[in-house]
Image (spheres, helix red, strand yellow):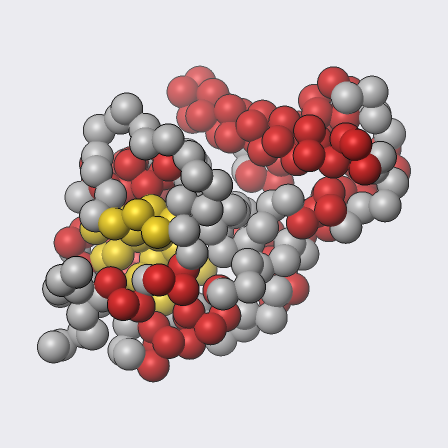
Length: 229
């Protein structure tokens, strides 16, 4: 496989790509074991739906509020509504675990000379807490939030903001996301894209076409020609 040429920066989605959103419910002993998977799935689905709906409605609220609202819906739907449980799960969401290969992959990329960054729907405070909590301090040159433009991915303003902050053209960026809709959205915008398809999702019937599909970020460094080669 011929490595992608001309890439100067590796930009990562956060939730589901760098950070394991399932780790919040997995670490919460107050959730019945038989409801943890359902809670994680519905919480994530409603969280994403609310980002898209708020963007369409022009009624922005930051990702912390969206995540909280989605959790309220989820707990009520599963018969688990409780202010204490809501508070505990939101606390755990601030310190999600990173996927095991993330730190090593970031070090390899930085040693090869790539700029590394996050571009996420997450609010600045959420992303700061997640990076610190996962022990990834110093492994990103920039942590960029959609909050700066007050819309959520896949709105083009979010991807454009990332490029503006990095001072790069779209074809100089390799964007990594585990979310198919995000991978296809970034590709349609013009970025080079590696879809980290951790969950074996079907390909989206949307504009865009990721350059590569992998199952783990550990596969990423081999797909990129070092900067300046």
